Structure formats: C-alpha cells, structure tokens
Image (cartoon, rainbow, N blue to C red):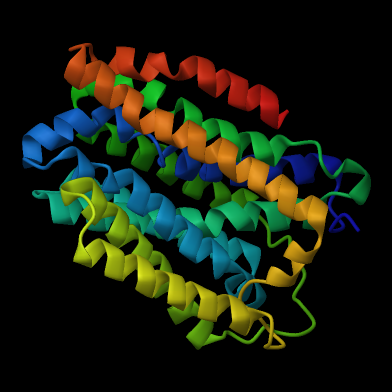
Length: 317
C-alpha cells in the first residue's frame, strides 16, 4: 500500500520530486514580470508576448493528458530524469534565445518537461504513501502556490540581472535537483500489470483542437474578431467534440471523461478551473499594468500580486 518504503525514504523521494516539480511549476509565471522587458527587446506586442505564458500552459496541459501512457511505459525514475533534462534544455535555449520565435519554442520545451512532472509527482505520492495520508495537500500547494509566487521572485531577479537571469536560476536549481536525484531517487513505482495502449488519433484530435483555440485567442488579442479567429474556434470546437465522443467509446481512452458523470467531481473541477482562470488572468495583466502604465519596476509588479499568492496557498492547505 505504501510502496514498501520506510517513512524517511518516502519523505526523501517526495522531497526530491517536489523540488523538481516546483521549478517546473514556478516557471509557468516567472516570465510575467519580465513581459514588458521582453516586448521592448524583441519588439512584439502584448498579445504575442503573453503567448510565452499561455502557450506554456497549453503545452503543459497537452502533455499532462498524455502522461498516463508514459507512466505505463517507463518507470518513475527514468521518466523523472527525462522530464528534468528536457526542462533544463529548454532553460538553456531560452537563455541564449536571439529572437522571439526561439524564445517561444524553448518555452514549449520547458512545458513538455513540466507537463510530465506534474502528474508524475501525484502518481508517485499515491504510490509510496498509505491511503490514510491521502489528501494532506502538500502536492496541491506546489501546483497552486508555486506559479503564484513566480512573478514576485522573478521581479527582483529581472531588476537586478535582467530577464535572462530567470532562466539561469531555473536551470541551476533544476540541474542541482537532477544531480541529487541520481544517487538518492530509487524507482519507487511498481511495474503495471498491463500496458495502456496509446491512442494516436485521440492525441491528434486533442492537440490540434487545443492549438486551434490558442491560435484563435492570439488572433483576437492581436486584431479582434475576424475570419481566422472564428474559423479557428469552430475547428477547435469540432476537434475537441470529436475527441470527447471518442473517449467515451474506446476501451482505453486518453482521458477518462466518464468521471464527469459524477456531479461532485464536475462541480469541484469547475470551481478550481474558475479560480485558476481568475488568478492567472490577474497575474498576467497586473504586472503589465504596473510596469507599462504606472512605470513601476518589475519587482513592484511582482509584489502587487503576492497577496493573492498567499491566499492561493491558504486555499490549497
């Protein structure tokens, strides 16, 4: 029931994975305080600049949805190292990015690593701890609180050393965690009895449906409603609807949407979604307003949303 590990080793395993996952989670929002600086350096508007954060979250969600297949094929130790190395590579690419497309692409590489780490730590925690300790909220605090404090931390870094230093900090911390995991992180997950079959068609439908919605959002931010935005929304809706129908009909779905038949689950998820949407929207817009309109520093813009971060942590607890 608890993975056969003594309490001390369980805490060490979870601590190592929490450190790596925290770096990945905090990376979601650490670019927010630096958006005005990036806009000036690469000569892009706010709509394109925000893709650094929104595209990161989209990609993270895509790979989180596909993580069940990866967990069934690879052991936790190997999957953790793959995710961390991918995240470090993305940080290095962002550090040396010479134009905006390279910076955006490197952010997507980071998001792939984060998308694997987020569900992995939850699966590992459930595997190594007894059921009596479920629901203590430790992993939830990381997922909810780490992105919230990202702008506050990055604000001071940006003011002191520039926006590229943020990736230096993330890369150094991630590399240290990876090196620490080599001798101290065992393979804690049992091999599943049966391997889940990867449904490529579901992955394509889900990925392109989400991408269409992302394209539509970017088009609306840049030039308002138009033919491209409307067509992207329509195509994305059709692809996601087809994806949902397929998940309810195939024996090994990519996502088990049947859980939405439970009313408590659906209501709870809707509330969490609305809360995260509200907080992330404010986290992006407030730093832009504080720096561009009020002329304050990146550190001040990050501190402006810190009270909300504290409330988010209290909610998770």
